[in-house]
Length: 388
Image (cartoon, rainbow, N blue to C red; front, top):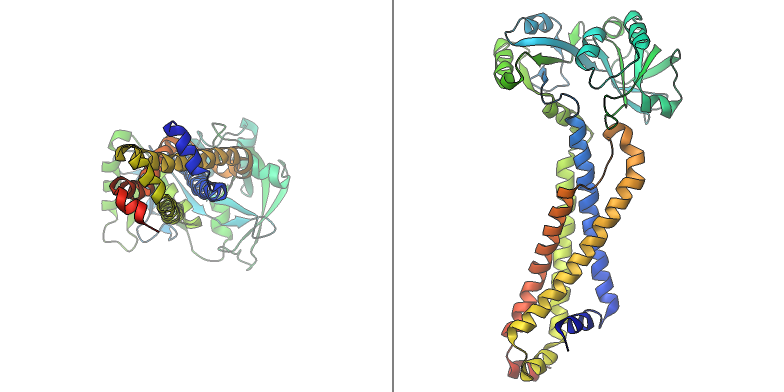
């Protein structure tokens, strides 16, 4: 009888137990694949466009704290600054708070110039937006979701910045609907005139949220960032300058620390599966103690028995991982991507995630099978046949 036949028969002597083990591992790898696939999309979103070339200057305390408007002219005169713009988080929602829109008050001319790789507008819409102080442009996904058209009067609410009359409601003229430079670029935002926002809000004075700086030499961005921060050292509003990709990740983390969540969930799932599979395999081998003793009596080498036990563990682990990652791939591409594509782009399980998952499955199989396999290897014939 071949080793393969023995392995299959041992695995399915109790089919329900084996199936439940495979399902448990499948769920763990489904979580691993799905969460890491989403995290991959999250990272791609934060690094879209020229995010690794531009610098973001924000308040050193936290990017939610404002900076004086006077910083714009001072930073513009720093050696190595080729261009800059500024923006302020508006925190808008449409009709109900659940309808959140990533809304920013921006300096329209410089913002469209610097972010032309991410915000693509027809020329006539761009001109209309620049000419209308109460104008706003929205992303295509926002327009499609809420049925917004160019020329509409758009009411947006802000919990952070009420108007001078005390109302949370602001009203804008939709002057354009933008798309991304690439199909994968998110179009879930809206941009309004900073001047209209600044003169209409009830508090805060002429402050700006953050500035986006284009270095004259991208290879010396770190030096430029240090010069900008040194300019405001020991002032009441010190700055923190970082590349835009890092800033975007920090900003999106306000929705939740996704990296920590992924690590916690995946770690807990794998620890639980490690305990379950290891304990179950140990019990399964213990149930076959006399059989192992008989096999050794018939001349089966201890190494061959060790190989069979390890192979059982690896088979369960690799099959469960393959099913979990495969199911995760299908769900991300066909279920999650249509829901979040507009905000985070396409979500899928990439090749590096698959390869890492395969390595984890191999490690899980070896770790869970090693102890029972060594136990079977060391088991003496007299002890095996004499055990009740």
